[in-house]
Image (cartoon, rainbow over all chains, first blue to last red):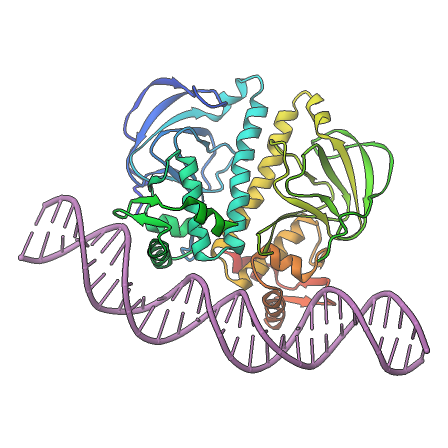
Length: 215
Length: 215
DNA sequence: CGGGCGGTTGAGGTCAATCAATCAGAGTGG
DNA sequence: CCACTCTGATTGATTGACCTCAACCGCCCG
């Protein structure tokens, strides 16, 4: 769980555009190591980011160390766009990750950047609303089922899913403990809804039944 | 908890602008009774709304009836703006409520409506992120403390807070049961952090201590 | 071979849910 | 004005899902 906040990002290469998706900005690609901080809560929000490869978690901490992951970002996702001057959450890489980084001001040069930012914010809001439903009202098994299905969709994986995050990250996203995540996964495996092939690989044997669990 | 979905909204008066705040649209004011549906999940998302007086809850239901309130809207708040064609949640009034209603298309006529929609979505997203932290990682007492403080701020109440919603609504927002909400409020009262004057009125005796509970 | 790390499994504890009365206030009708 | 009812809130007793604490496992790497 240690984050190498001070380790420098690994080399900035030539400028590259935010080419796919609908937010276009000229930026610089940057490679990060595992568990590196991209930005921290309270820092100035001067840059925006787009994931090229790898993955990022956005999280908040309570004073006693309790941790809640608000969202994950995968290739193609834009993150770090905020209306205020200050970051309201910390962003960290999950594994080796490449990002495009652009000054926040850059994006305003886009003629209808407003509409694009809006759609981007709406996509995050939609996920956040699903997340609220999951955290507020679903059981551990239902949380895991919803999580695996969402992940399969966002990663465009078929039924074989390579988990980009640790059990701890899953727990902190789902509002559970690492032990409950582990137990619940083996329970789902026992019910033949999933198969676990090494701890970072899951096959969805019955996506229909998983979806039913989420109603 | 019954919603009078079929009861007609009470009279539409002369056109009125979305005058304050930053989203401006010509619309029509409309009065709703208590617990009336403004729109339902799955319906077409053709209109947007602004609260004039009263309050609105936005909620989702699981198949077995579990209910999660995603957000409340108070005077000045705009809600019902969605990128898709279909509503992803139900909106219902809490008590007697007046809304301005406008066709969704109307808003696009605003030159930089994109930027305004973006700020609006960001405000909702910010609240949703706080909500995720609360649901994922806080105890019942911490949830209530955070809720009361947020409410006081959004309603611009001082220390004396008129709750616009029932215990059931609070429970469904906070991911608790009505019994736990009730018990926890009396516990906070016992600790002299709040005083309860009739079940719809709360005084925050020690907002500092409540804030500390939330870290 | 030994140590470390992430994950799994087990035993027991805890906080909130559930089930069940009881209570308080608002509205109704005698 | 006082029963009576209905609804929402409170309180109590018990249960249960998930957490905590602890041991263990498997894998990687030195």
